[in-house]
Structure formats: structure tokens, C-alpha cells
Image (cartoon, rainbow, N blue to C red):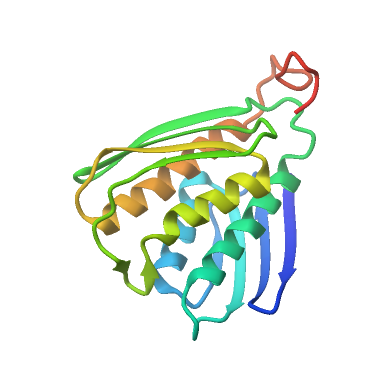
Length: 194
């Protein structure tokens, strides 16, 4: 079983994350931000990952530290769960629709972090989650996991749909990238390491 477990404690947040890449889509998520919980539950369900996230953050300030630090912890859990990356496909991509919204997500578990994020979110908040934190969350994941991550809007509309579309596309792309391929006996790189 490919799992990653992370405990992250700072003056701003106290976070526990557990991720099983070979799960069935079960999630237990509590961050104090209802819409963010909904997105993390969607990530687990559509990626078929088992995910536990417990966060106590300084929500009396705002949602920034809670969401960013959860991204860091989840990114570290992904990095731990993929291990040396031997035998996995490394690359994953998805173009995913949700009603009027359509998003592309492509990623490379290269060990080289980079985020390219293109989304035209028009609302300041969805529920109690600041929409500007969506980019910060994916930035934190990409850098903590060592992932090259591209998220691009092909069609927008309702901000709830747009964000949910991103999270589901990310889940499908990560599931694809972490799958084993029997033709790959080592690491998929001419360097011999990732």
C-alpha cells in the first residue's frame, strides 16, 4: 500500500493528513471550511484515494493559513506515497466537464515543482472559502510534492462548478500518473531518477 502520513504544526495551524493512493475513495475531512471540505472529499472520491484530513487553523484571521498549509501537508503526503516512483506512469492528464465548466489538468511527477494556473474566477468567495486560495492551494501542493502542475480553464461560468471541476480533474490526473504500468520496470526517466 502506497501511503503518506504528515503531521504539520505551526503557530497558525495543526494539521494531520493521511493519503492512500491505492484506496477506494473514502474520505474523512474536517478543516473548518465547509466548501474546502467538499473539494477535498471530491478529490478523494474521484481519484479513488483514501484520505484523512484534520485541521485546526486560525480561521478567526481568515482561511489563508488553513488552506495553504493543508496544501503543503497534502503535497508532502503525495511525495511520500509515490516513494521512488519506480513503475509508475509519471504523467497524468484529464479534461473534465461540470455542467458549463470545462477544465484541463496535466501533471508530471518530475520532482521539479512548477504551477501554471489559468482560471477566471469571478466571485470573491464560495461559501467561506476565498476563491483566491484555490491557486495558493495548488501552488502549495505542486511545490511540496515536487510536481509540475498545469490547470487551465477551457470554459467557465459558475464559480462553484469551476473550482469543483479543477479538483476533480486534478484527482483524475493524479490517479493516472500514480498508476503502475507493467512495461515500466524502473523510473520513467532517461536520468534514472526523479
